[in-house]
Image (cartoon, rainbow, N blue to C red; front, top):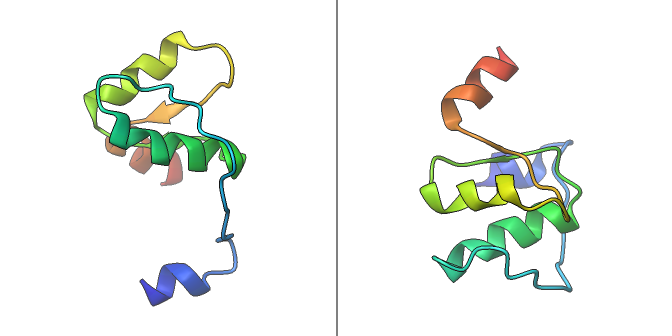
Length: 74
């Protein structure tokens, strides 16, 4: 955890708005809200509940599977 917390490309983001974009598993929304607030380029998850984000045009959150993410960074 300390490695992640002290990495130069990591920012602490406090979210102030809840978008409620994932209805099937509301607990997943904290990750989406954080990605939006932090202006993340994408969110990495293999969780099936995040697939709904492909159908939502605003706010746009691109979701990559772990495999696709690995291919992207290599």
